[in-house]
Length: 343
Ligand SMILES: Cc1cc2nc3c(=O)[nH]c(=O)nc-3n(C[C@H](O)[C@H](O)[C@H](O)COP(=O)(O)OP(=O)(O)OC[C@H]3O[C@@H](n4cnc5c(N)ncnc54)[C@H](O)[C@@H]3O)c2cc1C
Image (cartoon, rainbow, N blue to C red; front, side, top):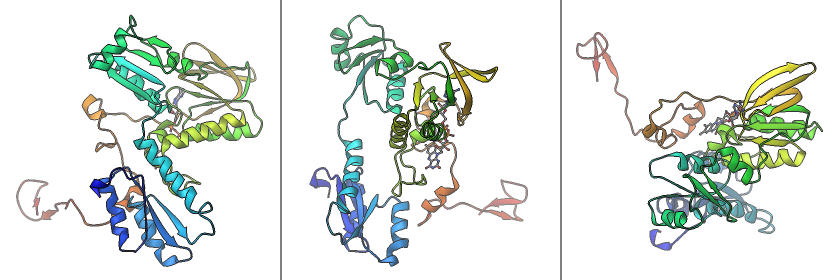
C-alpha cells in the first residue's frame, strides 16, 4: 500500500479477509484512520471488536446495513476524516515565533500556544525563514519575537501578553463572583460548566493550559460519552466552549497565589496582583509530578519515557511477550540476593 499516496480513512468488515489488510494500513500510513464494519445485531464479534479498539488496530466501527449513509456512515467517516486532517493537514498558524538556536524560550512559547489550541510555527533565527522574518516584519524586535497572523508583532512576549493579543481574557471582569474555580483541567472545566449552567456567576482561572493534564493525552478512552475515545486537546476545547456558552468566564495565563477570607467573601490573588472576589472557591489544581529534571529526558516524555503506568494499560498488553523476565533461582550461589542466581 506504500505506493498508493495518502490514505485518510480505510474501512473493512471485521473477520473478513480484508480486515488484516485494514490493520496493516497503519504500517504504511500511520495517520490513516481505520473503521471496522460490523453487521448490526451480530453480538459474536463484540469481543474481537473490543480487542481491536483496545489495541488500536482500528479507530472506529460502524454497523451495517443502514437506511441512509447520512444516518450511520457519514458521521463516523466525518469524524475519522477530521481526526486525520488534524494530524496531517497544515493548520492555520496564528503565530510564528523566531528565536536564537538553543535558547529554548521560543520553543517554550510555541509549546504553550499548542497546549492552548493555537497552531504556531517556529523558525530558528539562523534559518533562511528566520533571517527573512528578522530582516522584514520582525526587524528590530528582541528575541524571541512573534508575528501574528494579521501582522501584529511582539518582542520577547510573556505568555500573558500573547494570550491578550490572541483575544483571551487575562483579568477578571466582575467585582464579585458566586464561584471561582482554580484550575481548568477536567475537574475545573466540569465545575465551570455545572456552576454556570445553574445560573451562578463563575470564573475559571488557569495558569498554563486549559485542559490540564488531560489536554496532553493523545487519546482518552474512559471519558463518559466518547465511545471511540477523545483527544485530550479536543476534550479541553469542547468543554471550555461549553462552559463559556453556559456563561462561565475564563481568566488564563494567571496563577492563583493566595486565598484569604474577607467577611462573607473569599479573595484570590493572582499573579500580576489582580484579585478575584467570590462567595465560594473550588480548588481544582490537580497534581504536578516531580521529574528527574534532565532536559534531554524531558523531551522524550510520552515517547518512551513515562512517569507512571495505569492499571488500565494492562488490557493493551495482550499477545506474545517481547521481553521475558529472568527469574531468580533459589539455593544456588552467584551474583544477586544471597543464595540466588539468574536463571
Ligand atoms: C499524558 C496523560 C494521559 C492521561 N490519560 C488519561 C486517560 O486516558 N484516562 C484517565 O482517566 N486519566 C488520564 N490521565 C490522567 C488525567 O488527565 C488526570 O487525572 C486529570 O487531568 C486530572 O484532572 P484535574 O482537573 O483534577 O487536574 P489537572 O488535569 O491536573 O488540571 C489542573 C489544572 O490546574 C491548573 N493549576 C494548578 N494550580 C493552579 C493555580 N494555583 N492557579 C491557576 N491554575 C492552576 C494547572 O495548570 C492545570 O491546568 C492522563 C494524564 C496524562 C498526563
